[in-house]
Image (cartoon, rainbow, N blue to C red; front, side):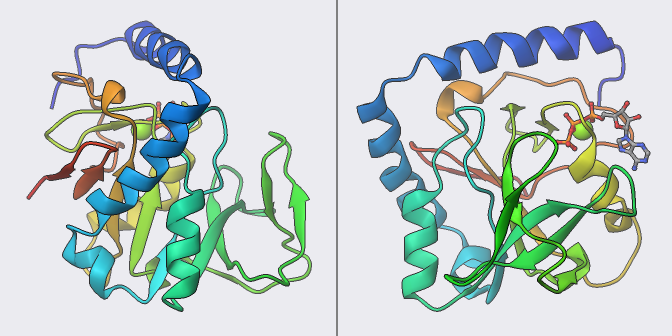
Length: 200
Ligand SMILES: Nc1ncnc2c1ncn2[C@@H]1O[C@H](COP(=O)(O)OP(=O)(O)OP(=O)(O)O)[C@@H](O)[C@H]1O
Ligand SMILES: [Mg+2]
């Protein structure tokens, strides 16, 4: 834990990493998408979870295309995050299948259409593969700054069933140590194109 980092410092880290991530070549991204799956296969949660939430790649995040195909082939139930229309700043999750109706949310991100599908709370997902901007080997995570995942997962502070949280990232997003705030929900593991970091 380190609360001495300011908001400005968190923003500076985000800016710098997003810039580096934007410069990765197409061929590197494609190869990383395949290697990401190899790293994820090292995780017992990945092997045993039936209901898995993933994201559709946005803002040059590590590409989930190969992962999605693998999950479909192994007949896992895939869920995608959607902005909750009523609970401001929270995410909900909707099953993603070939027939799922999609629409663009206010950030321009493609998500299942809330009006046409049943949504479930994060509590009922066994594994959530989360996008991130930066991570460290202690499991600290910096997202895009909206607090969406942190708000949605705040229940993890309480006892009860909870999903496993694995961050997906390029190796270049790893920081030696990250500023972490009391509301930040830590990760159990991070998978990159190089390896799986198991936190505890
Ligand atoms: N559980 C929570 N309840 C209320 N506000 C929260 C909660 N979690 C985060 N926030 C607010 O969200 C804002 C952004 O949080 P933070 O900088 O940690 O975002 P992030 O982790 O980068 O985003 P995300 O969670 O979407 O990946 C903070 O100003 C914080 O006050
Ligand atoms: Mg946070």
